[in-house]
Image (cartoon, rainbow, N blue to C red):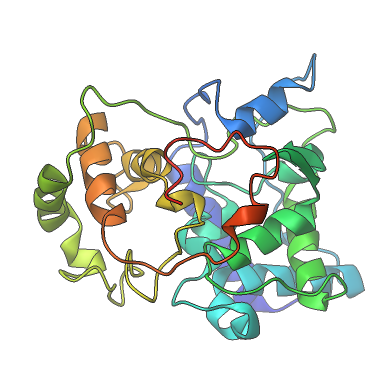
Length: 282
């Protein structure tokens, strides 16, 4: 097994442990939590991602390792399908190992599921991220790289029994005491975010762009102020999550998402049966 991959995955796992393996509870009412709630009698398992040493040394193991590379270095391994400057791990922190930051652990047991009025597979969901968060295009259904990402997520989910609720899933939602204020958000961005993301929001060597052509498009979940606010609250500044108030997180998210970013051209197919959330920006 590639020692560099083992080391990278081990470091990601150690980081997720040191940042706290017990996530805040999910807030009922979100689309993802609704999908979980339909699985009556589900049991909440422990957050216990497998050790990198348990990756098999066979073809399946090669798939898992490629999937890890696709997540942490999407710009290199998935460049044909990426249209911005992001890597999957920019949102799925620590290669999907951080609870409360769109973790991949246990996600396999939740698919297929209903989203936006249609049934989607795990591969479908991955491709939605490529089309929106990565501002790119879907991987072909028979793509070895798509299969590799699925294999990696399946491996991360191996210790989570089918039917589990996966309480650390997604990003725990928060609420604000006032309508999000982008003017205040700019002040927060200047004070807390520019060191990593740059004064122009175009990113630095430390962090990715948060608006402009190199960032996620308007179809990404992060383009929703509530989702971005929750991510900021729990995970930003990097390594110092929960250091801003809920109101500050909403204001910062409102400022960031008020800035220009790529369009998402095929919005008509996203909510075929209606029910689009009010904060979706299209």
